Image 1: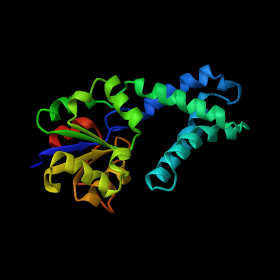
Image 2: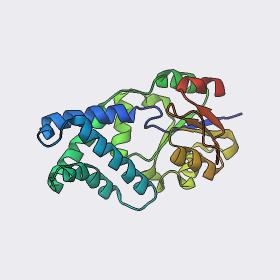
Image 3: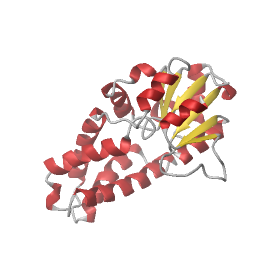
Length: 230
């Protein structure tokens, strides 16, 4: 039925949460931020909540990449009385240097890629930054699985905008009916793919099922369940 598979990278194949936490913990220690926070968990909780909000705003076009990059590291500092943009920028640079060197993948990611790659041209479709995403693929030694890597900065549109999916379709010379999207973000990946007319597999180990208002074509709690779908 399907001839092409589009797939998200962060928290679908590459474990963004684990890798981000590991990178920030190293910075927390080297920067001696424990002098200002009760513990790392306090810092990470403040960061992660604000980072999620900022990525949502970025995805909707409300803020720039530069604003996101600064604010997500400045906000936790401000919460403990440190209004230091230079420090936030320095932490942000260290983070972007460290993050793509981390190699923790989502369980069954390699098994899924090993299964899919011989059968379908695979295309990454991601809102992540160009300077980071390619390094992640290289560090994890998984770049060889993908025919194309489509990033929002190159496509000129962020998921859920249908134009990023249309850009990926054009690269593959694929039609809507022969393509399916796999992703962990209901809004960005599933609604985005629906906007473009694509079928979707909603991967989320933390929920029981796809939302019922605009349900995904398929739902998987684990990546190994996708083997049965495709």
